[in-house]
Image 1 (cartoon, one colour):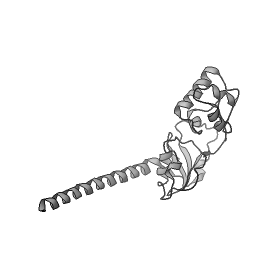
Image 2: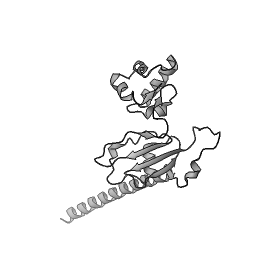
Image 3: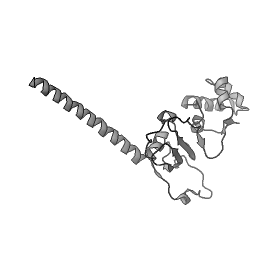
Image 4: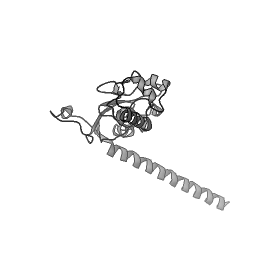
Length: 194
């Protein structure tokens, strides 16, 4: 019987050690996300553009993060940041956040407002400051990927079609892009222009 108690205590000790290691890893990941994600912008006067300046591809992104996050606000993030970086910069999800309501892997766009829904709320459409329509003749891959159901592969096909065939003359020209059918076009029609 003493062997059984010792074996049970050993298994309990191993289980506790595994749980402790998992918790330590989770804390390390969260701290790393918060440290590298970005910082809130408190002095809005620093956002004024320099006269004659043109946006650079390595310019920081300014993203408004609202909804079910610990610290909603305006955050300055590195170029190429994704939704997971913005959520991390805003202190992470709150307990009532609908984590399935956001695509954590989506790349952010400068001037975007990211709204994290709460449980029971419907996810909002992606919003951004500036023009509401994406111009098919000038949009880069990032702008195209911000459209619903357009990932990196379809964005690349749209750009390739444009390079091979010239400008889109109408939104209906999207039907000539492999992978875009009537149903997808119907969902994009009010979001794009030529």
